[in-house]
Image 1 (cartoon, rainbow, N blue to C red):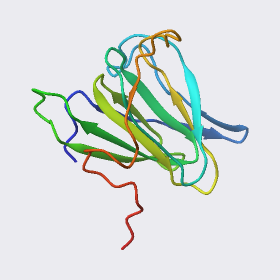
Image 2: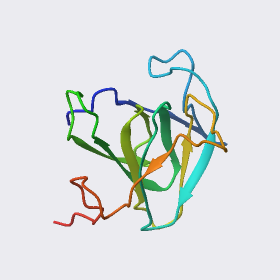
Image 3: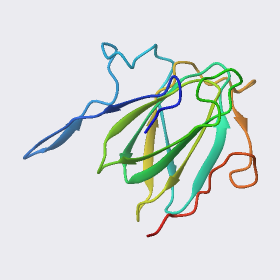
Length: 153
């Protein structure tokens, strides 16, 4: 799959032993790291779509640490070499992956597991409660060429 300009993905390594498992999500010595702003989790219940939004000044670093998500990105940036491109990623416990989502790229996700899915996001900026860097549109009624429906076949 051709990635949207500025998007990066890194397969994460799960290290299991008889006590459980360990997985590093983001390290400051990885090329994918920019800077630290904050870390938070968000969840979605099975079948729930949380979309679409973008940030004007924030880059996200997202990983699914419980369950499975379909994470979708859309590039609407004027002048971008990948304007109009959609990227779809199936990530979570069965495919541990870190996604770097650049500013101005629409993104959202849908829980595709039978249990609640948990996302950890490590953006490079702090959330501003008085002036949030978050710009939303409707998840289904919009100009993005993507349907959140399951693709059977």
